[in-house]
Length: 148
Image 1 (cartoon, rainbow, N blue to C red):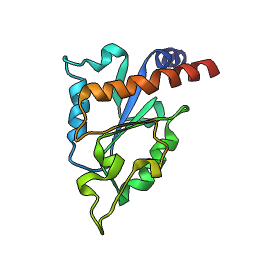
Image 2: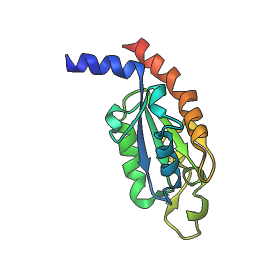
Image 3: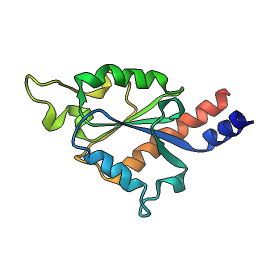
């Protein structure tokens, strides 16, 4: 019974898993702003949590460090099909200020896992993050519903 209810809810909502791979946390603060009354992310049926096994979208923030390369791939493998990845900010796209010669920052994230959308900025605005999620997630979730 619980699994059937969970399946119905997952078909009508978007579950987002936030993964910070290292950085200044500026993008994470903008994601938190999405949960505020001004943007109210949940009114769109989008819920943020930390479980990749139930995620429709993986949001990646921060520069990928040595410790995160393998962990990021493991998190990606745990996510159900279709796997949707949105990278937020300049750090996962280019390494930004953390990508120094001789450093241990690896960019872009697309070298390790497939990326569906990139939201540049340092940090990107909450409205841009919301737009990116809504541009890639509903179509993929609809396709998943057709396969079941």
